[in-house]
Image (cartoon, rainbow, N blue to C red; front, side):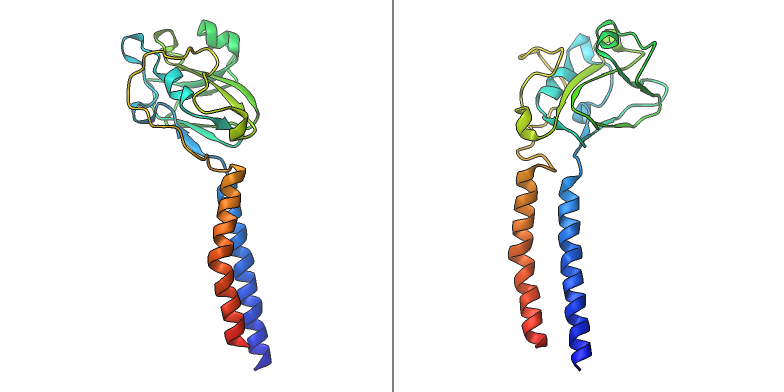
Length: 193
C-alpha cells in the first residue's frame, strides 16, 4: 500500500513539474505578427504608407516572428540592409522569400528592413526596430524610416497590452499556476496520506 501511495505521490509531483515547465515555456516564445494585419503584404493603395503605420502600433522583441501573407509570384518578402531599403535595391538580399506566406524570426536586436522586390517603389516596404524586451521600446514609437502621423490604410489592430514572452507575462502565469494547481496537489497528498 505504501508503494502505491509513493508512486502516486511521485506521479503527482512529476505532473506538477511538467505543467509548470509547459506554462513557463509557452509564454517564453515570441509572438507572431501578421504584417499589415488583415491588409496583408500587398501594394499599398495610392502610395499610402500602410506598413509604417502598422509597425508604429507594435513593439517587436527578440524571438518574435513576422509573417508576410502574400500570393506567390505576385509579391516577395525580402530582407535587405538600410541602403537597399532606401533605394529599393534587391541585388544583395539578406533573405529572399518568394513563396507566401513567408515567416522571419527576429533573432537579434536592431533594425530590420523588408521590401517587396516587385513593388518596393510603390511603398511596399517595412522597417522595424527589435529590442530585447517590451520595456525597451514603447509601443507607438516610430519605426525607422517612418514619420508619426502618416496617413494609413487597411485595418490596423491596437497594440498588445502585454506582449507574449515579457517578464510580467511569465510572472503572472507562474502566479496563476501556483494559485490554481498547488492547492490541488497539496489536497491530493493529504487524501493519499
